[in-house]
Length: 119
Image (cartoon, rainbow, N blue to C red; front, side, top):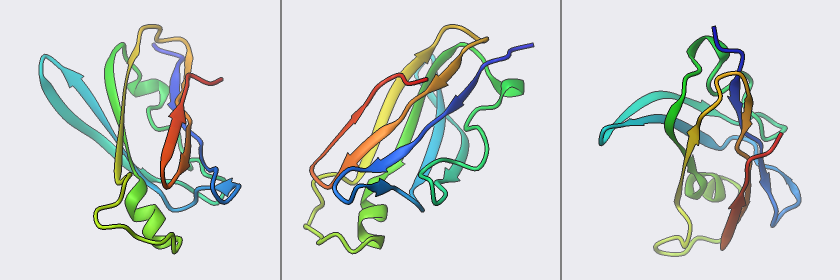
């Protein structure tokens, strides 16, 4: 059985705080198919209350995290553009080791973002 799991941490770098209330979706990508696994919302610390992909569901393959940044920015009162520069942010990545912790954080502002494989 796998020991690995998937987490994230979303920080609002424009405001200097965790991004609470941001919706995140996880998809599995296989042979051209995109399958929804789950949808979660970040807590007051900018993290999800549970692992995005827990050990009992963890497997190798390609995945996509979709961060609904536009909805979050609207909810925080960030002045809206029509359309927003950043609305939905997809991040595609691979899992190759079922016994590792994969951490995919998002550093977010209204006009830019960055990510990396964290720990």
